[in-house]
Every structure is written in C-alpha cells, then in structure tokens.
Image (tube, rainbow, N blue to C red; front, side):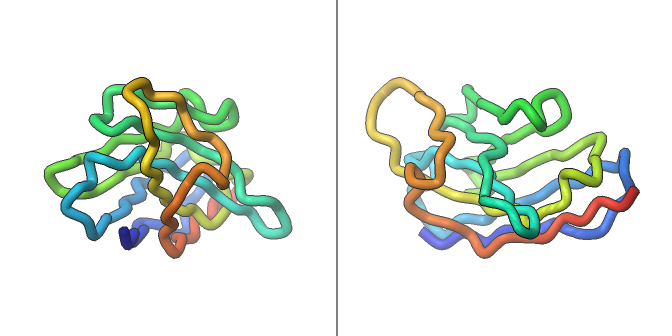
Length: 127
C-alpha cells in the first residue's frame, strides 16, 4: 500500500485545516488507518485512528474535541479535520495503515502496530 498525505500548510492559531491521505490499494477498507505527527526534536506521536468502516475512532487526549478523523472507502482516502489549531500542533503529519487482525476494533496507538506509512505533510501553526 502506498500512502500520499497532503493538505498541510502555514496557518494562524485558531484556524482549521484538513489533511488528506490517498491510498493506492483496491482493498482500502481492509486497513485500519491512523494519523501520527512529529514535531522538531520530538518522537513521532499518535494522533488518531479509525476502524475499517469508519464507525469507530480514537484520539490522543491532546487533540480530542478539536480534531476529527474520517475516511471515504469509495475514494480510498483518509482525512483529518483539524480545528482550533494551536502552535503546539506544529509538526509533520503522517498517515499510516495497518492490517489489524480480528473482528473487534482495538485502537492501535503505537508506531510499531502500523505496516505502511505516508511521506508526511508539514503543518505550521503561528501564534
């Protein structure tokens, strides 16, 4: 699976931005998807994840209530709607995919659980 993230940019604090991640696969709905981010000098951290159908989501506490993850399986695309952006949201954002085995969605929140990664898109939030 190849993932292509886009939509990053420079915005002011309080603004909104929507990231997209296009997947090159005919079986997009077989993958659990996630967003991670990495700020300069920091480890890559979990942001959000979404189940195969999009019916279940899970967020990091730092973005809960401000960010929304969604997917369109017909378009093989993952989204991250980011509202009320803060300077501390500045980072390179990565989309990721995992073939999560099992019928129940257990949110994968660590890097090691993801099999495929996009190239990242930079989000810069100015104060």
